[in-house]
Length: 235
Ligand SMILES: [Zn+2]
Ligand SMILES: [Zn+2]
Image (cartoon, rainbow, N blue to C red; front, side, top):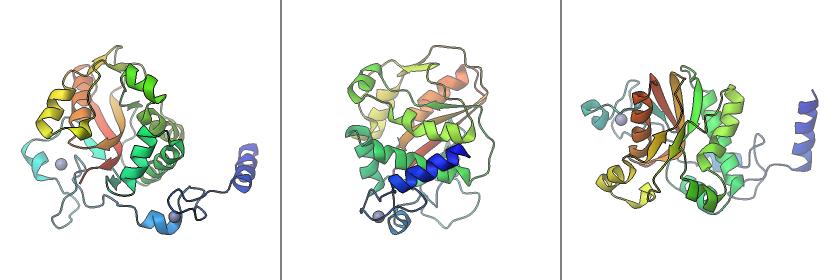
């Protein structure tokens, strides 16, 4: 009751405003309805790796790549395509301290996850950031994305079992083969993995090299199932 009153008071004092066009926000989110409808959604995608599929939609679709070789992780969910303005919102959040964009992105991802059926994981593991990057940036964007999701689904966040031991180059800046080399051996498990079903949270999945590397390591250390929840997939 008190919480509800506080929320109402907050929305009266600080009405939501669209981060993209400045119009009043909709549903207490900092995005208006027309701008939200224009976001590039990843509707027709592979049910395993979330890569966009251009062929005719069917409910059991798997991309050619996953048919030949299924991913190490069990399922990737990514509601948006890494196109304008989602790419701008993500890079603002990641590289220009735009925490308001991060909050909006996290709530949009949560809104999508709330609507899908599926087994609830035991724990959320945001993809770890190297210590040096964390010091430079002040926050790990994957942790910030994960917080409202963990709170909503009442899932713990595991922020200490795994560390990033190599300072890797940004995956986006590299070609496919270099991405695999860049990320190989980048993570280290520091504690026993006690959970069976984990979900990794990251901002963007490009080739999936980062989440595959981490999922393989977690499975080697006893995880039975590793899913991925990301904001966006590159087309
Ligand atoms: Zn707008
Ligand atoms: Zn696929």
